[in-house]
Amino acid sequence: MAEKTRYSDEELQEFKELILEKLEKARKDYDTLKAVISGSDGNDIADTSPTFKVLEEGAAVLSKEEAGRLAQRQAQFISHLEAALVRVENKTYGICRVTGKLISKERLRAVPHATLSMEAKEGKEKV
Image (cartoon, rainbow, N blue to C red; front, top):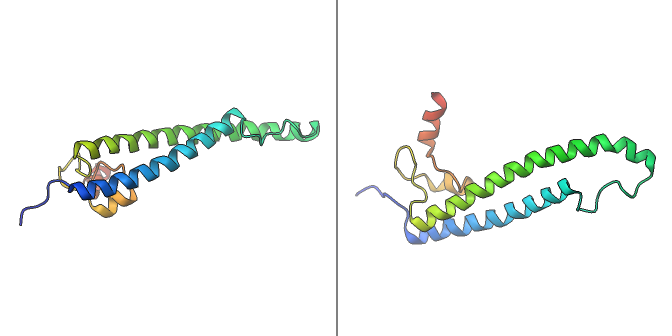
């Protein structure tokens, strides 16, 4: 029997639903992080006494920096998921960009934006 070169339309639809689910959650998380950065989450120290405000300013700056880094990573994750959706529409989703073989379903369920098979990824790490 010939080796499959791409996933069926039904399988692609299953992956599309998984990606859309992850994308929705990622966008909510990103919005939450943006709210933390801008201070619009209503959970800041503006309404506390001046003593606590002085003590917490350093922590607030650190927290905003961390939230900024997390937001940047989340935006990149969203971008990768959106690119995966394009590959689903093009029917090229799940094809390793190095080997040209299908990426395992297990890997795609765990990392739906993957573009490398485990074989290619392990080979890349050895270099």
